[in-house]
Length: 248
Image 1 (tube, rainbow, N blue to C red):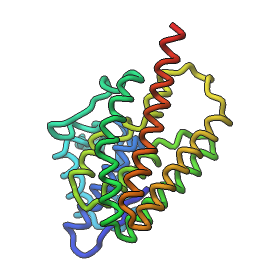
Image 2 (cartoon, rainbow, N blue to C red; image 1 turned 90 degrees about the horizontal axis):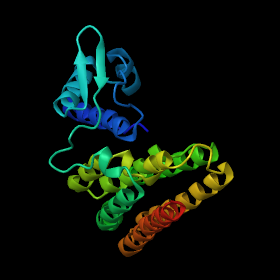
Image 3 (spheres, one colour; image 1 turned 30 degrees about the horizontal axis):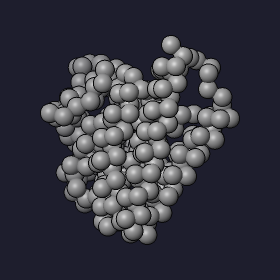
């Protein structure tokens, strides 16, 4: 989804564009090696000037997310180091690794949900609702909904008003969503499409419970709903890990 841009001054426009493009990279919509749209295409999509586009690209380069090859274009390098703290792909290679990251997310995101309930604005709610809607659409279409799932959790982090929550979620990226790694651990064709759809819709019902609590500004309910959601995901992965062990 496109992040709304504040059009009050060029600096804000550039930062808004950086956030929008960074979101696409974090969610995997722009993968490592992909070429960014042309300056003209970005200008048209986001309704910004060439100066704003070039400033945003410069910031993405400084963050190590893109690389400009003169005469060819600008290409995505990946997620970069994300600062001193980073969880690499090699640390999300097994179900046990996924469970460990979920434990970290429980500790961080339960409090983020409570803060979001206290501090969120209408624009935050709109962004969360859009992510929940995109998740449902993907589930009904038979897709994995990973990008929309990550976007929902990222929007909650943003709604805290504390940039450290957002930065941590951005560092974790879409691979922190369990299904982003689980698929590689299963044989192709093992997943029943109907069962997968029903499972995703149950997950999204948990998202809706979190959203309802944040909308009601009920910090304790938001904290509890987020803990339930992530704990359910952790237990599903633990059971899957045990099932894999028994098959060996």
